Image (cartoon, rainbow, N blue to C red; front, top):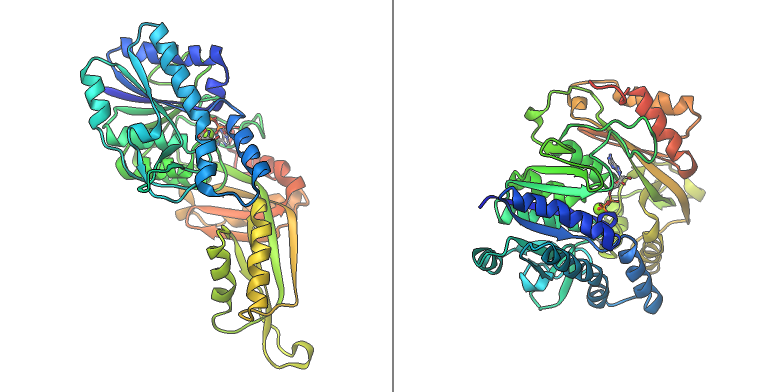
Length: 419
Ligand code: ADP
Ligand code: ASP
Ligand code: MG
C-alpha cells in the first residue's frame, strides 16, 4: 500500500477536540487507500512546562533525566491519537520512540538519528493496522536511555520516517497554511509560497524560521523526501500548503525570497585581547567545549602600543543565543584564569536580535547587501554585526527594532508580490 507520513504539531493536538480534528484528516487519507505513519508533538505549551520543571528542580541537570521528562509530552498525545483513531474504527496503535526502536546517538537533548528499523511497524501494517502513531522528538541511545532531538524535533522525526518507509509524501500539519516570505505573525504582508527550495528553507530554518526544524530540512534534502507544510485547521487537499522541493521545480525568480529573524541573541565583546596567532582558537575552543553555539564573529583591526606595550591588541566580538551567555562568560573567565587568554574586559549585550534575508538569486545578483543596509539605515536601525554567505545576509541589531527591520526588508525586496 502507498504510505504517507502526517505530522501534527503542538497547536494541532492542543486538546482533545483538536486531536479529533487531526484524526479526521488521518482517517480521510486511510479512506483514500494510504497506510499512514502519524507523528505527534506534545500538546502546545507542554514541552515548555516540562523544561521549566526540570530547570526548577535541577539547574545543572543530568541531561539523561531531562530527556526522560521532556519526552513524556509526546507519549500522552501518541496514546490519545491512537485511542481517537480506534474510536473512529481506524485500526491504530501508538509507539514511543524506544518501542520502534528509533535508534539515536547519545547526545541527550540534541540526539541524531542512527537508524529506524522497519520490522516492527511493517509487521503491524501486514496484520492490518492502517496507522502507526509515533511519539515525535525522541529515540533511544545505544545505552538504552531515552533521548530527545532538540526543540522542534518532531519535524525531524516525521522526515526520518518518511525516508525510512519510502513515504509518498511527508505532510507537516501546523497552525499556518504554509511557508511564508516571513513569519506571518510579524507582518500581514507576508505572502504564502507555493514552493520553496530545500536550500532556501534550510537557511531560513537555521536563521530562526521555526516553521520547520533545520535538521528536518537537511534530511529531506538528502533523502529527497517530498516535504509539505499545511494547516491542520483548514480543509486541505493534495494541492494545499507549501512544497519544499528542488530548486529546478521552482518558477519564481526573486533575488530575495524570505526574511527570517532570531529574537533572543546576545553580543559579547572581549575588549583588548592580544592579537597573536592562535588567539581565535584559544577563545572559541573553550566556548565550543562548553556547548556555546557561537554564530557571528568579528575581529577588529589591531592596534599597537596598548598601555606602552608594543604587542598588538584587538577586540573580538561574537554572538550567541541569550540563554548561553552564562556558559560563555564562565568558559571565557576560566580560560583567562588558566592563562590561555588575556583580555581587559568582557562586554555583554543581551538585547540583540538577528534579521536575515535569504535567496538563491543572490548567487548571481550583486547589490543585495547595499539595498538591505540602506533600508535599515532609512529606518534608523543601527547594525552591530554583519555576516554573509552565498545565499544569505544577516545583521545583528537592537531587539527593539526587530519587527521594524523585518517589515522594512520585506517591503524593500517586494516580497508581498509574486516574482
Ligand atoms: P508546530 O507546533 O506545529 O510545530 P511551530 O510553532 O513550531 O508549529 O511553527 C509554526 C510557526 O512558525 C507559525 O505559527 C509561524 O509563526 C512561525 N513561522 C516563522 N517563520 C515562518 C515562515 N516563514 N512561514 C510560516 N511560518 C513561520
Ligand atoms: N514538543 C517538542 C518541542 O516543543 C518537539 C516538537 O514539537 O517538535 O520542542
Ligand atoms: Mg515546530
